[in-house]
Image (cartoon, rainbow, N blue to C red):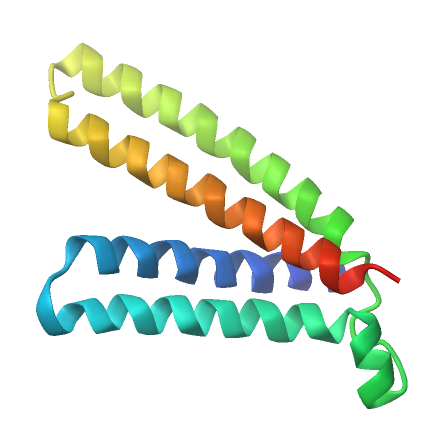
Length: 134
């Protein structure tokens, strides 16, 4: 059960970061601050949960709070999420192409979303690996 909870919490944090970055990119003026707030909250949630499963948790609480190999778990979760995402993107792209709704703007937006998601996933994975290293 702790593995499921870990995946939910860390995927939630990743979702906040990605959606916050998209909000920051698309909005203008004061609404950009909402995107920045989402990114900050996502990073705080991910970092705090990563802390609970790291060696630093032992120093503060004298035990590990989350007894899961977070880097291995998140690599597995990212792999499955990427697989599902690629499958859905292929199906959506085929649908948009077949219906004639695939335009230049949609293409650039999808490409930016995919690149941003991959970047955030890589950064979160490296953060998890760094925090869990003995």
